Length: 257
Length: 284
Image 1 (cartoon, rainbow over the protein chains, first blue to last red):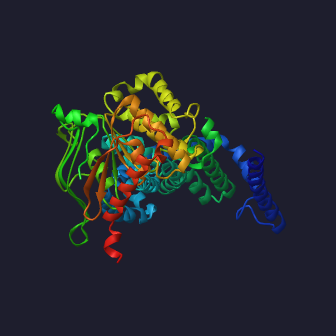
Image 2: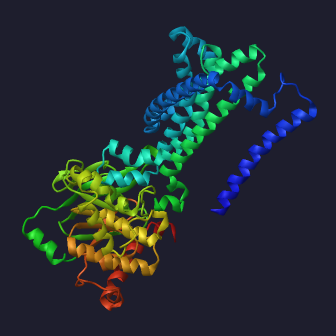
């Protein structure tokens, strides 16, 4: 308990220290607002203009979560297909790597062409950005299942579906959750990219307009919102992960619960 | 060298009873073409219902291959493997298997691990949702208590010792009341005292339920303690070269294993296996 508190305290101190250093450096070196606003200014801007910023934040969060949900759905499906057979794994992997190495900004105009500017391209961009880590992790988790564990099931004449549900998927859960933590931040990146390029709503769009007006504190307020949303979602998935996959870390909390 | 079978087996044969498990001219090879290894060559084996058969022999003699063939984990290159008169896959026989490693699923408690067969195997699986909190749970608790694991069912596998896990593994192999129990060196990785204790546990389980058991082991004392019948195998190519009845009365005790009859049986088995070892071909 004590060491956990110490770790928490350490990371909070680091965050606070970072903002203090930033504030202090701006004052000491006389950096102008238009280059780098002080954190206090950013927060003041955020509070003052919250009614205007809020709908954009909600839009971004909504877009990200929808894209993320679709990413999980398709990511797990593709991951299961690829992970459950050696042949599929070897066949599909190069194509997957190829898709993942395409810069995602480049596909936004294509989505806009197909679906028009707005929410749909943003959702799709968030989805394709977060799908790859999920697919790879689920597939790896399934492909590395110990044959001994499968033999236990096969000796009971279990069907392929039984083996998948009772051994494969639980075994892949730690991999899946590890990928979710990466994927949720990736989904945010996707949403903001698409909003920046082709949308009239969302934090990405807000920041785009703010920067063209040289309203730099507002740009940073947008960044702050993104960071807070990202951290919040990360924490939520970390918590779910520790509840579901505590067996990998052999924590006593998990054993009791 | 076919010795007199144990009374039950003889009776079963005289009554014209069909063998419960039958291997007919079974050959099994691993690998392909130039790297082909014949694990088992034209092997015949009949096992009658309720019998306890041990397979012993040098490493690489195909003992485990026979188990895997009977369980259906692999299929024979040629020949027939019949269980209850049908080919593997079609037979309506419940099979339980315990492996050399306990292979517990690490994300499940001991109770859920032991309950796994009830979730998978018909007819239990149809009622799994309804009974898993009641009847099935009580059943698992009772079986765990029988092997000395009462009170551990909420623990996770990593919280238990190897001996405890192996007990749990035996429970998992037996929970669905299999007619056929396959034991693949289940006590091999344990210390001697735990192993001897588990022989007693295993014997009691067998005496109370009478499944047909096939045990693969390296330990001749273990084979002679537990089995009704011991088949000695040779390696490369693997085949059965000797079939012994074990005449000692049950329940057997560890003290019996030091008596002259018992020692002379294990001694004789040992000589057979040494003579059949592939090392003989290399050594001058």
